[in-house]
Each structure stands twice: as C-alpha cells, then as structure tokens.
Image 1 (cartoon, helix red, strand yellow):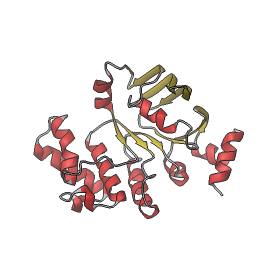
Image 2 (spheres, helix red, strand yellow):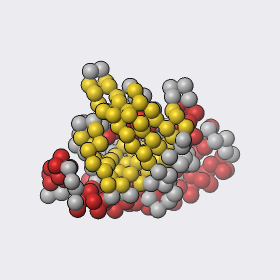
Image 3 (cartoon, helix red, strand yellow):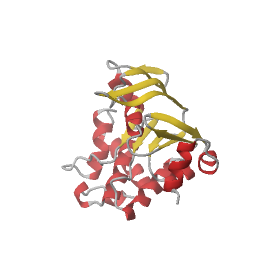
Image 4 (spheres, helix red, strand yellow):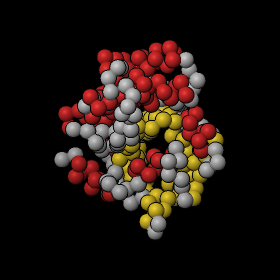
Length: 240
C-alpha cells in the first residue's frame, strides 16, 4: 500500500532522512517511534507528499507519486491526523465532517451527514455534532479530526503524533479511539511516543534515529528482545 524507496530529504544542509526504505502492506498497522529530531514526522509527511523527497521514490497503492500527480493520488488514497487539530473554527463539528465528502466525493448533504454521524458514534461524540470546535476539549477536537479522516473514506490514515498536543488526562480517550480503528481494515502509520499503544496495536514497530531506520520488528521483538544498542538505550530511558 505504501512504499518508500531510497528516500532522502534535505532541509538546506540538514540531511533529515537518509536512504529510507520502507513498505507498508494493506491493512497493516505500523508504529514509528524514536527520539525527537529522528525523522519520524518527515517520513510520514513524505508518504503523502506534504514533504517532497529530495530524491528517492514514493509509491501509494502501486502508483509512483510525483510532483505532478500527488494531489490526485494522495486525495484518493490517504488522510492525515496532525498534532494540531486543524478544524474549521467557523463550522460546527458536523460541518467539519461533511464539507469534504460533499465537495470532493460529491455526496449529497443527507449522505454526508449520515456518514458523519456513523463516525461520530465510533469516536463517541454524536452529541457534539452541532457545537463549534472552540467549545470542545483538546481530546474531543482530536477525536473529531479522526472522525473527519474516516469520513474521507481513504484506505490509508497517517497519524503524526496525534496525542502530543493534548493534556495527559485526554490522551487515553484519543488512544482508545485509535485502538478501535486498529480492528478496521485501514492501513495505519502512526508516529507516537505512546509505547503502550505501540505494544497493543502495532503489527510492526519501527525505531528511527538520526534520519535512519535503526530497527524494526513485531512489538514482542521490539520491546522484549531488541538487538540494536541504540534501540536498547532509547527503550531503557522511556520504559523506566
């Protein structure tokens, strides 16, 4: 479903991604972890060309993504949930969820609203359909953002540290929704610092450091028997 092939990314002289090779199968749940500045978010942003690789190739569902076709391919294949919620403040929750399906998928207002309510039920916020984002907690806003991603009906959802901007008491409500999504046939790539989530949900955990993929494997391998010294040092600090 996703393939990165010898992807490099520079910001000026800063070599942020160094020859990244990564494949994600359809329906797979991949969690990317690592220290700040390791290239995790840039890797995910290259998957939907929010960041264009300096060199290397990106394939989505078997199609190579280029600067010319990126809008067409990405619009039809992937949605993204960011650290910040990026909801339209002048629209109700329902408006935020239905604008995409109506404008891009050409659904009727009735169809779009039925779908929006279905996904609001999944994230537990049906009763908030007619309120504005400013009245919601951070955790509720992020759950709305996840419902909006689901309304896009994409095969792939990318998550870029979706809980990092939240208060500690609201993190779990977002993680619970993502755990629920993991049982659905959606390809998920998640950048996170939440190790419990990674252990519970991931089919594969990828550890990045200094712009490279250092180690990858099942959660059992990664948390119980890592082989790379850099991985062991990282886990030793965060799992104390």
